[in-house]
Length: 257
Image (cartoon, rainbow, N blue to C red; front, side, top):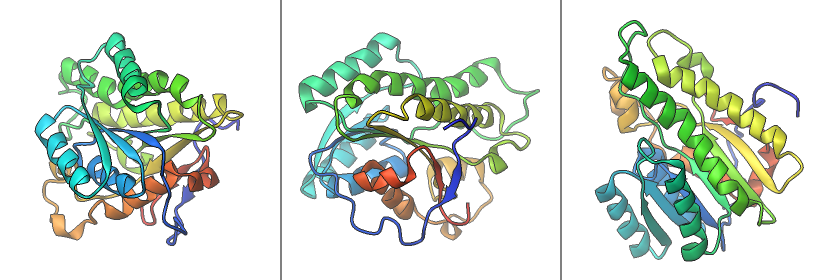
C-alpha cells in the first residue's frame, strides 16, 4: 500500500455477514466510558472477548464492568487518563495486560476529546495542545505500547475511529479537526509498515451517533433523530474479529456518512 491515506470503502448493509466470534481474544477498549466505546465493549464481550475497559471516568467504567459481568461476559477495569499519562504509564499498561490478561489481540481506539466548536483565533493554546494530545498523540502511544503484544498473535487488529474530512476540515473544528486528519495519516503509515505482519490496521468512520460528544457539538440537534451507537459497535466488533481481514488497511464508513 502506497497511498497517503486509508482508502475509503462503504460498509455493506449486511456486514458482518455472520455473528463475529471473539472467543479467546483480549481487546483493549480506549474510551470505554463513552457512547461508542461502551456499546462496543458490551457487544465484544457477548462475542466472547475479554474486554479491558480503559478510560478516565471511573464510575462509568464500574457500571459498564458490572453490566458486562452480570450478562456473563468477561471484563477488566483500567482507569487511565490519556491527557495526563506519560510514556512510563503506557508501558505499565502493557505490563498489566501481560500479567493479568495473558496478552492482547486487539486495540480499539474510541476515545475523543472535543470541547465544542470555536475559531482558531480564539483558541486557548492549552486547549489546542490538549486536543492534539488526546486525539492524536495518545492513539500513537497506545498503538506503540500494544504493538509488541499484538505481534505475538496469529491475527490481531488495531481499529482507529476517525471522523470523515468532509466534516472536520470545516471552519471552527480547530484542534479536533487537525487531529483527525493527522490520525488518518498516522493510520495509513502504520498500515503500510505492518502490511506483511499479522497485525491489521483499520480506520472506521461511524458517522452520526447519539452520544454526549455529538450533543456537545451539535447542541441544536434533536437527539432522537440521530442513530444510537449499536450499529456502529456491531461493525467495530466485526473489524476486531477475523472477519475484519476483508477491510485490512481501509477506512470503513457506515452508509450515509
